[in-house]
Amino acid sequence: MAINKEKFFDLRNVCEAHGAGLVAVSKTKPASDILDLYNAGQRDFGENYVQELVEKQAVLPADIRWHFIGHLQSNKVKFIAPFVYLVHGVDSLNLLKEIHKQGIKLGRPIPCLLQVHIAREETKFGFDETELTACMAQIQADPAAFTGVRIRGLMGMASFSEDQALVRQEFKKLKKLFDKNGFSSPADFLSMGMSGDYQVALEEGATLIRIGSLLFGYRG
Ligand SMILES: *Cc1c(COP(=O)(O)O)cnc(C)c1O
Image 1 (cartoon, rainbow, N blue to C red):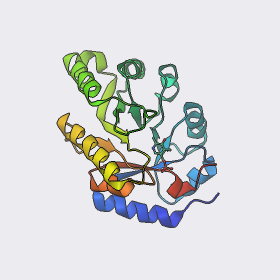
Image 2: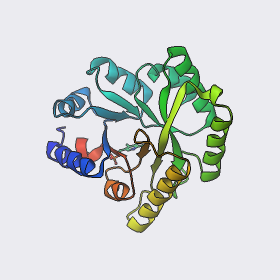
Image 3: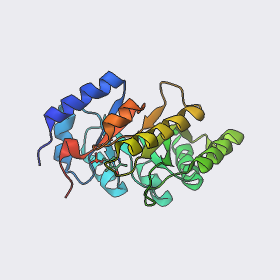
């Protein structure tokens, strides 16, 4: 399966116009596809599965910035902790504590985004607004317990829906929570938007979009 270079250059321009970053989501795609996009200039890649990420990282260029965007289990944190650039899907305090533990072990605070549940589907992971507030409060109350992580922002997935107004409303909600929780540094990330809804996400303030199928084709 060939990568879509034309779409890549287009997406890169669109992101640049919005001051946003592009994460190329390469899950289930072979290392050769990743290398093709790397050679076209892409450096940020996103993966959903720990074992797949570890295998690809071992054989691909060392300056790739690997984003973990899937649902991370606590017992697997240790496999990606040494090299992961950003963990997008932190959805529990227990997971955050485990990442902290690994960060301390490695002497490197691991950058994390807290995942917020904004979609209608129940199947998607993440904190609701109340849980997010509680989690942020806990971190602020006991910063020494979280020195192995660095909370860099929020991540969310909108409903899988043709209803643009609904999707926009969900992204607006995430942006509001991002602002409300004090993420205002240029180093902070608001990770929202995929192949089907990235335009709306960028309009609503995304600073990272996660694009798979538009770049790599449909996943079988
Ligand atoms: C697979 C995936 C993407 C990319 O999805 P596309 O629709 O192929 O762009 C983005 N974010 C997450 C969390 C994913 O699991």
